[in-house]
Length: 112
Image (cartoon, rainbow, N blue to C red; front, side, top):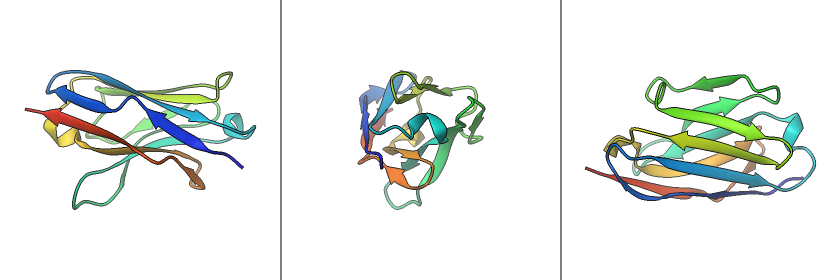
């Protein structure tokens, strides 16, 4: 069992940065891949970035070079550093442990 809680969302101007955090409870965090997803109004939820238990990362083409996913297994926490934000990055961002456990989401709004 695990529970996830995101934080760090907010309103930022285009070109700005935000760092999202995903704190996990339970002992399975370090054994599983983590993913950050987002869902914009009227759109399907999409995978933004993922990191395996060993630290291998992957990114959606739309965020490559701007977003960085990382994890600290000692703190049971995953992060998403978002730089050079664009208005099209506006969405609710969710973290997921594997595909089983999901956070409640944190809103990111990028103003032009």
